[in-house]
Amino acid sequence: MSPHLTMIREVEKHANETVKMGCWLHNKRSSGKIQFLQLRDGSGYIQGVVVKSEVSTEVWEAAAKLTQESSLYVTGTVREDTRSKGGYELNVTSIEVIQITEEYPITPKEHGVDYLMDHRHLWIRAPRQRAILVVRAQIIRAIQQFFDERGFQLVDPPILTPSSCEGTTNLFATKYFDEDAYLTQSGQLYMEAAAMALGRVYSFGPTFRAEKSKTRRHLIEFWMIEPEMAFVTHEESLVIQEQFVSHIVQSVLHNCRKELEVLERDVTKLESITAPFPRISYDEAVEFLQANGHEFAWGEDFGAPHETAIAASYDKPVFITNYPTEIKAFYMKPDPNRAEVVLCADMIAPEGYGEIIGGSQRIDDPELMEQRFAEHELSKEAYQWYLDLRKYGTVPHSGFGLGLERTVAWICGLDHVRETIAFPRLLYRLYP
Ligand code: 4AD
Ligand code: MG
Image (cartoon, rainbow, N blue to C red; front, side, top):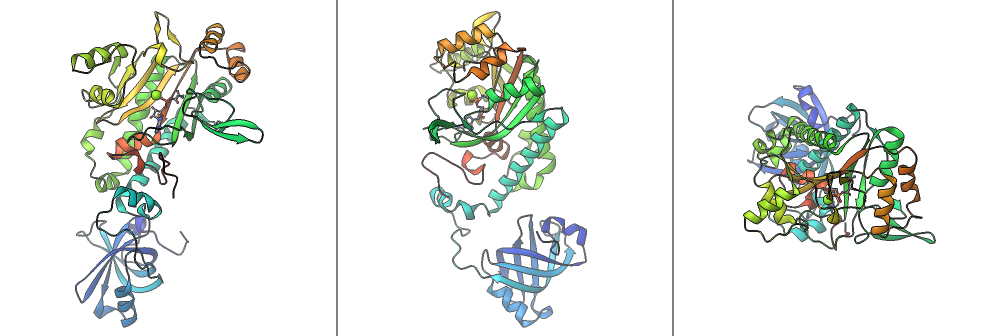
């Protein structure tokens, strides 16, 4: 915003002063003698009041011409007004129209989801969409703050990779000159290398999965936060995870009250999100499902309905720990007392939002890692660098990945992850 303009979010610092703002018209009402302009500038909303007897004919007519999403500079005096939503309104003295918008495609009437998605570049101007993006930005700030305060270094793993991390089924293939390459599914393996160099690290970047699942929890491109910690056990990692997620929720509650109100989020459900979180083992989860009428055998992986059923017993996120080795990634460390399960946990959000974190302690033993490579038919050449980490000063280490969009969906109370990112990449949707 240019320095000569005042932002709506800072009007309270300018009570009784004359200010100039760059705005769009969100909505308008008129009583014949007074026009009420609902103005937005991205930073907030304010009502502009144009009184016919107080302004020139030009200003009155300029206001009358304004349509939804017309752009303008407006000058006026900031007045404290306890009846208005933001507590202030603008007594308009002059209007400089930049553009009169004609036939804005998104009207206050209801539109179908496909139509809105086709107009996502405009839809994000809507108050609800703006609120979600503001909460997302606050979540990102809270994440960075959490790790910065605890001595983690931010490391950026590559996006173009020669091999997979989370299985080969949903890789996005591309050419890297003459070589085959893939868009990263997870930065974890690289973050393990970084943890051996810097101790405690985290990455924050886009990840890609060519998932053919059209659900309300899956995106093709999503952002993941992946901490990796040398000398940290699975148990210690769980404590960090629950503190991390509590910190994010409390930070949004503290900084985004207005936005949560726009979203009509039941904040009492968020206020109870404080560490520690409940933990159940995979075995207990299976027993619970079987006792509650689900057809489920030990060794299967949970689907969305199973996760939702388990989460329904808790008002906080719940950890499901120690999954069968068979259904989890090759790098997870087996439980020393019970090799058929691994030292891992998924964190399941409350209210049916599903898995928001997947994490584990990693195999640090070079021989076991070699054995896993054979079992999973992984190329030792492609991963030589990863095997090196177990060869040169291997240490116990753990890490996890938080899915940003699912976290935003849960905290904002949304039906679908498509609204959690400005331009979602979904199955069969690459536009806009
Ligand atoms: O459980 P995932 O697959 O774990 C990993 O990728 C590990 N390498 C992370 C690690 O230990 N460093 O994915 C982690 C999280 C999930 O819990 C979920 O929140 C999110 O990423 N996620 C998705 N979010 C949106 N759309 C998708 N298609 C997602 N796939 C995973
Ligand atoms: Mg997972």
